[in-house]
Length: 441
Image: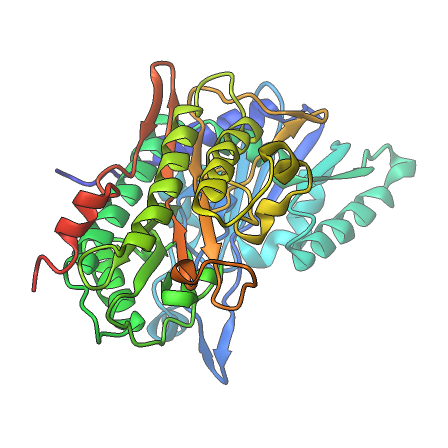
């Protein structure tokens, strides 16, 4: 199947929607990002700002997008000029004319003219939307331009008086996936599931966590992804009980359960899948017992991911199943109500169950509106990821469960017909997982 590709008209439609969301006297300013030094005179591979790319499709350092709101919104793009000498060293640049053709913006200029032209673009605006919490350089640039406009007040100039966090309006836009966004996200999740399957099929005791990571990420890149959407977590045995374990350096022992939380990007949308694989090919009785509890919670959470539901309700549903399981396994004791009231379950389950998924693995978008949990709508995509973590050094835990960490995470698309699990190509039933592990050896 031909991979989905977002075209210039899709990006133009997104800018038009954002422009319509903005008040007529508001301007949105986003930076594409800059290169970051890795060491000395080498840089990390460039990844554009998520919202900037969502609205332009460009992956070009030192670019800025300006959108004026209202009934007839307009966009201006500032990019690096064509420079043959610089391009020999650092790669091709579209230049203003190329950027205009690629993105269908109304106007495109050299980035060197931003400071002077930004004053004109801000004239008449009362508020400016920028990513307040994550782009100090852009904020200072906007403030300088705003002050310059304000100095013309005696001549009738109207200058901005309010800065607004751009992540709010972009969160509202990115939460509801348009057709192109959903196609990119579905493909990212499909490639993520493929990577899980290929790596798990080669899993064997005596190999290393980094070998699994390498095979997983090779599958991502071999199939056209730009790479992982976040640092891959590959934790064997007790390492699975470190929620954001990314060292991925330990040898995988016979009898270990391997927790893998990994997903890849497609057009900068990312999948996010967690699965657990028995290194020896079969779950031990204790691993199976814990896994069955988490799987039941995962299925309950997916079932609750319906229009009109909310992320809090999904968490509560998963937690209900997990606490029942913890009591049955003997990890907790006493009444269920007391366990919930005193939050005793947090010894084994300390995180929330869901987050928005899209361009970023923890995507923008509010989880509540005026203090009330946000109802799920058609077009939302979220994760459902319950887990149980029983570290080796926990007191009062049955010995057979020590060192077992299990999380099962799926990517769920909310539809009018009910939840659709985008990540269902990654096996998760006990029989399917056991059949997969080591099947390529």
